[in-house]
Image (tube, helix red, strand yellow):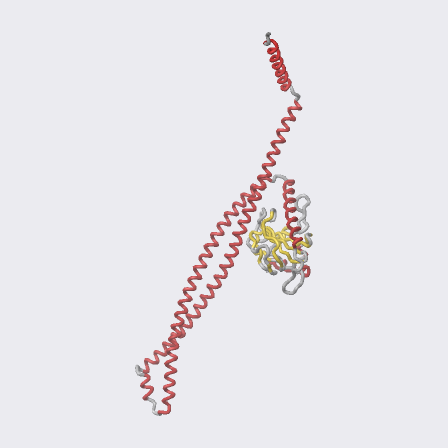
Length: 393
């Protein structure tokens, strides 16, 4: 039986069907082609957006690491600076003490010189002369006692001079040690300064990467909203853990008593006020105080450190719990001087002014919260003190 005929017929049918499909695809409507191209474009944009978001997150994490490193270096610089001042005071004290000892030595040496000169003019056998020149034997006892006193005074003076020389020698060794320690501290300070400059340059580069990823106000708003949400979550958590029993250790008065009387956390001028508008209708929940970088930030009242870490948009942040659900927040710092759990007194240095969190110029972000609600810090701070600071008093 011949089977070649049906097989050829089947293959011919498959070939014709394939050619028909190919022709139909080539003659597809233009709208369908546009849809294909649009889908491809959407996929490309979605991939690019995802990569950009990943890049921004990576840049934020790198900024966090860099600013935390700057914070550690800043604290070292602050500590070394304090040690330098203490060492300089100690060196000055020792130098003054040496000068006083030198004056005492000179006085004792002059007194001894006069005694020796007097003894020389009295002759080599002054004791024999004194003894045999007494015509009245009754005075002999007094003469002997006087001579013994005179001789003992001379010996004491010589011993005092010897002691002064020993004290001066020891003090000179101490001064040399002070100078060596001072030089080591200065060398360490310079090394940390160089490390700080390197980290700040890296920070500038990272900020450039982040800013290039943010092209529109909508993106800036989204970022600010995310930062605000992060901060609100932290504050809510802290508020739930806040201590109710804290009060001023000096007189037992609560934080609320000092409204309008609090000292400013640092000297400077207010550049952003509470309630003023940011981007997209957002409001400032605190104040920004423009201040010199490296300036100390001080706690406005006694309390316990509830938070000391880096937050996106706020940089190196320290939060103090003052009791009765009152919190004060200090952001944009270059370095934190206290850690979580530490007790701090009113006016104690807790941080150093900086521009962390992506801030362009140095300053301090300051908030006061009660039961998680932001308060106007200017209503709590002593305005008379601020006017004096503005005048440079």
